[in-house]
Length: 443
Ligand code: ADP
Ligand code: MG
Image (spheres, rainbow, N blue to C red):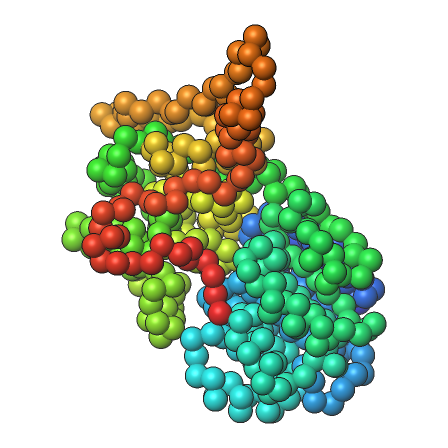
């Protein structure tokens, strides 16, 4: 199949040709025609498989072909869970809108509110946004959504999970008309994550699943190493920094303070490192991402703030210094490498605090995980034994206490969010008084 088979507007086609892609990816082959027919979509495919274009092209096409429902309201709203990802999507969108009659704007938390009011007054056709700030403008009547034709949620499972429900409901209600089309995209979007709320946003959605979230990503080589403690993790990290052929590296830690600490340690050891976390102000965040994406630094240490969507072509390696708290973030973190057909390496450190998370990842990937060993750095830690459920003595009648003892371990296993909650540096964190809140929430 070729891009020319979609029947896209010639101006759109010339931009596509300019991008130089030889053929549409599988998700593009399926999602573009379905979205162009007007279906609502729940679409999933692996990380780095071109989902952005799979929603941008039908959106551009719809605007080129259909008359606007309203002269003033935005026609397309694209929401992402983080500001960095919104920026990246906006940059791709601008390749199509610049030189066209369509105006696109970016509305992010952390940036000047009044400037955004002025921008919204100019009646843009496209808005790319993080949900919190967009909802604020909507509440204050700085724009209306009666004319909205397309609502797109990128990294949809994260958006639907993360306490964005109020903002999404508000946006949904403000654009509640028959002609609205809604597209959900992610690499991890199975039935469990498409909850009732998601279904309320959608109208007879078509499901397009190129791979299940757990399908092995053939371009990403995964390795796991057992670790005894923080120092051991650091020694292993130094080993890999020396021995691996790293172009650029993203290291994920459990918390903001771990990110700060580790980047400081790495810089002291002479490794050119920057740290990105929600702790920083927006201009610092912009500066860090800009310089890292230009290849000005070799290492980015971060939290799950950067696990989703970012397309940084020179990232050859990802290291999970701590395993992720939310199981599916594993797939997204390692998906920052091995993009668009290139190969990548993902190395994960697994200490006692990471064990439960490792087990959850193993369950999610439906794959037995084995461990590699670095000579001279073998861990004493061999994993935690699963807690045996206390079996009540058969002779005894079942008391309330017995029932509770039985139920407890099951409850923990079921909850897939248990993991390296506290990271490795509880003492330091207490000292500097940093917040423990998750670093993947955005305004
Ligand atoms: P995803 O959202 O699925 O993780 P992206 O949309 O970020 O993936 O795309 C990943 C990379 O693939 C980007 O650098 C993008 O430019 C590139 N890409 C998109 N479509 C194609 C294609 N048809 N052929 C080759 N590369 C593509
Ligand atoms: Mg994406």
